[in-house]
Length: 295
Image 1 (cartoon, rainbow, N blue to C red):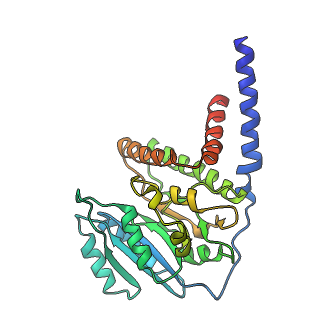
Image 2 (image 1 turned 90 degrees about the vertical axis):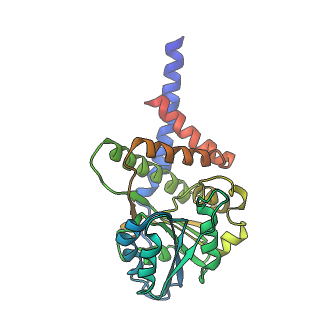
Image 3 (image 1 turned 120 degrees about the vertical axis):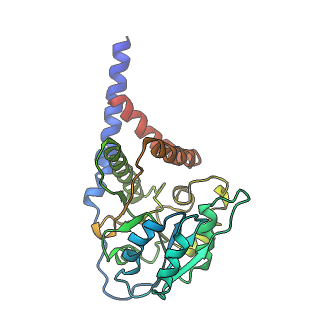
């Protein structure tokens, strides 16, 4: 009896996994490249929240500042940094006219709050088209902004892109990069299918108008994480969301160096996942459960 039950569970899990791979995840392979545009790029604003990121800003901010794009501004918001972040940003702003440096307000505890910082930068942005990345992140190409902008059409309000992690030696790095890639296959495939449920803030774009229309981060302002996935869970739908998978649209981030830091990051992400819509919880939960029983 037990063998029959286990066999039935295995077969059912196999069939469901087959559906996910052959009807959902395979879409990434055949996803068409963004159409090339040589003119009429909309002006945009790049927003970066930075907390104690002096070294990363020194290394990576020039790769954003020197993008091949006709009209863009960069807003970097210093989120209560204790290192040399303010000094580094001051040096850059003296050389680049399109760079604006903002300071985030402190919490009562004196710590930073990324959602509050991002909201300040979004409201300050001059343009409707916004592109987000992190201070410890860099685009792989100087065509990054052009690729993101090229994904927009008349009805598009949100563009979801891929943010990878940098290669380092060791098992932890392999695990982080594999998990990041597989998660991206999931959320990009479902978004392409018409069921967007998350994105990563290190490579995400949306319009200021959709941020204001959905009242920003208000519904989850007291949750530490979720400035990316919880916002997408609330604001994105099959009509207003597109994905971009071109290589030039990719960004790369610096990965965690210890299991403790990695687990803390995962715990924050999982706490945000509990706030997803019921439909999205079902989609993700079914895939994870059947994958567990299958393997």
